[in-house]
Image 1: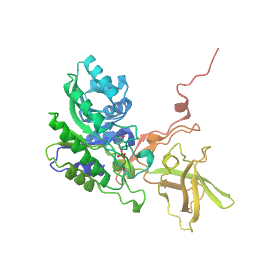
Image 2: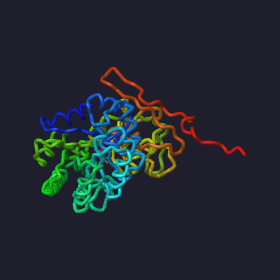
Image 3: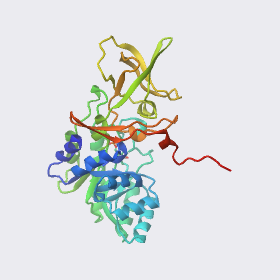
Image 4: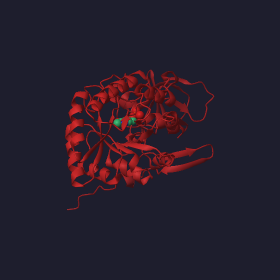
Amino acid sequence: MQRWQAFDQAFGSQPHLVCYAVKTNSNLAVLQTLAKLGAGFDIVSGGELARVLRAGGDPGKVVFSGVGKTESEMRFALHMGIKCFNIESEAELYRLEAIAQELATPAAISIRVNPDVDPKTHAYISTGLKENKFGVSFEQALPLYRYAFASEHLVVHGIDCHIGSQLLSLAPLEEAAKRVIDFQAKLTNEGIGLHHIDMGGGLGIDYQPQDNAPTPEAYVKALCAAINQPEIEILIEPGRSIIGNNGILVTKVEYLKNNQDKQFMIVDAAMNDLIRPALYDAWQDIVEVTQIPEAKTNNVDVVGPVCETGDFLGKTRNLAAQPGDYLAILSAGAYGFVMSSNYNTRPRAAEIMVDGADKHYCVRARETLDDLMRGETLITD
Ligand SMILES: *Cc1c(COP(=O)(O)O)cnc(C)c1O
């Protein structure tokens, strides 16, 4: 959890809150470890709020993002006293106002703006362009701020954005910050002051050495410089950059198979355990758990048992593992387990937290077939 501390410490005397993006890896023990350090949390559902609370997180440090907040999620979050609702549409603002009135509890809000900068990342994880479903344009945001400012049930707290994920350059983030503070000046002119600026998450990690991701220090320094307001509270919502390189997926080799020119290493993990390669064509390093002296096999595709051609974990790798050997798929701490499913009736893996060289904890038991069928019924008439 040194990565969370690196973000936190880089702010120096600037008021700030580092809100870990829970969706990245929401295991209770991960949340608990961060909560103990004083982390804030960025949630996208009532379920994630329930996890944060169970893990001992402070609801007063929670911001709630997402385009589809339901009424019951809003009631729950307002009742628990979260720090801020990150509003993504006009309709959502009105819904929150009605709920705040019903509960006689004013709701703190921020409007998620869409700065329309290209983060130069994968299309599926770029969120700050005009054509994305997230946030509202600056033009749309202005009347929403006026409305919220005038409402007795809403309290204007901040502004937020999140332009994309796995960003390997700081320039788009600096450009987004510049556009946000230009807009903030317009609000100030109308007498609408902000308590915080939330620049979202998105800092990338090294999946391979040439990715050369900026450090948390460089990222925070760049944001503080671009915002250049030593008094204002700056929020960030990093997820992947805190947890991504802290996790591996361990899998056993079941079979080796040759199809004419193609060699396959069939392992017992699959796209249901780690979907990033299949979904985003993401590259994650795969290494042998025990070093193998034999020459590596060139061009082997590491595939799972799921009945989909897209079920691969890595293509054209150099590996010498044999059936029974273990492989580690690296950088699997973010968007790994949380995106897993039971497709093909495959129980999901156990989660183990390792602390230093000599301590480890099983923080999630391996699923059983009974777990998978719980809640299903046979028809008896
Ligand atoms: C996904 C998400 C994040 C975290 O993104 P990372 O790229 O993992 O840092 C932060 N904020 C919001 C609103 C998100 O949707």
